[in-house]
Image (cartoon, rainbow, N blue to C red; front, side):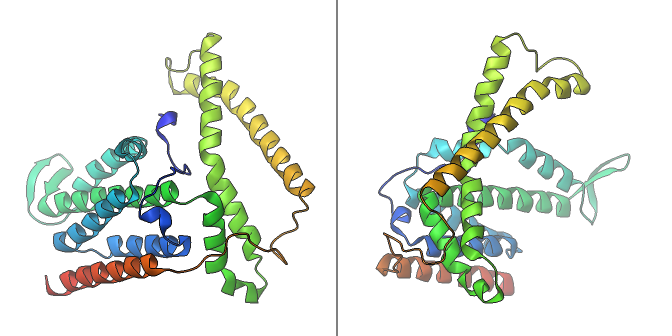
Length: 266
């Protein structure tokens, strides 16, 4: 399961999304998330889902990576879908004791499931096609107006990107520790819940030690390079909007208009 988590991983490619300005990708992700949750009928949800699948195709990232990201949350998707089936008003199709299934409940279950899948696909597309450095620059530029209020935008963007970047690293470290403990005879899959929780202690302790050691090494490396925050820093690569970005924004606006029209007239 740990090997299936792909959050924070970058996949180098020559796809259309890789060439887009990272600011456009971050803003597009935020807009698409709003678009997905503002889809109140199947027509609007279908347009949003089509746009999510179209984004996956444009990324030119192998499909198995997206399937891995879905596999990591399949339990959450199934649990949420099942629970939403029983939350709906109207005439029950099936009823047993206090549990009843209605058409409204089935509709809610489908909407929640599709929305979660779309969110995972779009979030994975962003991290697969954007390097941590570009993501830091994009977040810093987008949050720059907050600097008027004395907020340290550069430091916040740096912390967010470092945290995202270390997700796959720590997951890989966890997998190595679990394999090492199993090789020493540790049993982590049998027994009751209390026994399994106790079996996690030999994993969590070295994992925390490794995380603090990596954080210390990173801090020392940044200090040795005279890192003192974003004030006065220059960039080797400056972000510039191009024709691809204009096309991407135009397509996003067209699909947004389609979702809004479906919600209003259908």
